[in-house]
Length: 448
Image 1 (spheres, rainbow, N blue to C red):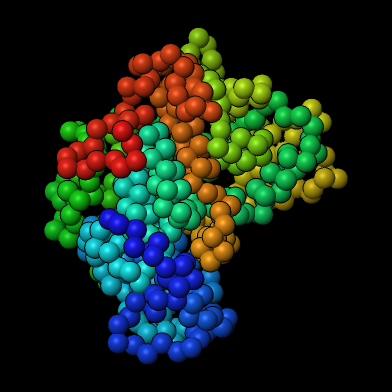
Image 2 (cartoon, one colour; image 1 turned 90 degrees about the vertical axis):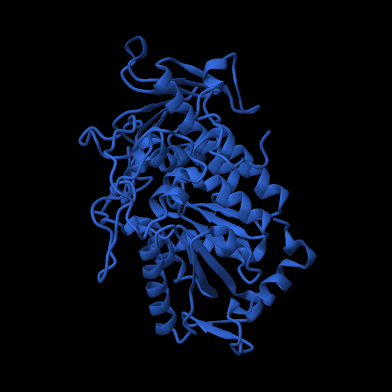
């Protein structure tokens, strides 16, 4: 797809969008969420992937002044119907014309010239192609974490974003959350001294795919769900793609389980690691880089998976709180004390630096983050990088993939984060989480 938007300035492009609603009269300005916006400042969104996470993302975006949502795409027709209903109710509530077009194939959505930015919440194995094709069509992107399924996909996505002069925000919303920003600021300021150790609890690596095969429901295009995924053992199971039904249009059961299997995801390593490893990297100044050695738990008696940085910092996947073995979070250990942080919780060894704060986070509440979405929208307008740009998402995802490679090989893996290459390790380089051949006819652009 050619990048048509380069023929006009970005401000002109935004002004041309006109909500994408043919035949409607567009007023000189538009009042959205109580804020009066000029037409040239509106940002028009399309959504690819319309499951539970996408609904949370929409509920965050709708609080950002000056946005409009005009289209949604999913392989499940019932999810498309639900998204149209949810968007229509919001549009009606703010006296906006009701319209949200539906697509089964995302390429058709990307052909629209009236859409400025894309929100992506598809399974991880689709992220790379969704993002790259969005950039090639001249659109900015909000992409859910982890950035991709493999290492080479993340590298290709960086090239696509930069070559097409696009904005990309990774859905690592903890970067926009108060307690994590406090922790990052304290560590960076040296408040607890030089950091020597970091404890990060994220959970288990993925297990081999072992779900029972079930009939594909008529409202779902499972072949399109598979897309580039090239694994003969993967078949449909309703826990992978939680089903929704009329009239309530709600998913049944837990969050989609595809993320917990090797052939379709990266387990808790990629799921929660994309959050907590991301914060750890930000705090110690390793955005865009990462550890140099990955040692799996159990190797030569190693109790916890261990990641070693070139500057001497050691990060282990272990409990970060003595009173809660399974709680997910981070502890930074410095020469002058420690800081512990998790969702809704922060504590420091020196209470004069900050008072302990702890509150219960309701289910699904943290999946919404209007400040993170607002940062993306501001970046679309200003053309500056957001708080979680593509290089940040790439380096965090590479870290998670490398740890899983070490887990599966059962031995240490060494990596040069500056050159993004393995150190004398052909076996690791041949691992599917570095690169795998896409199912035909799919190919990965920006990668040879």
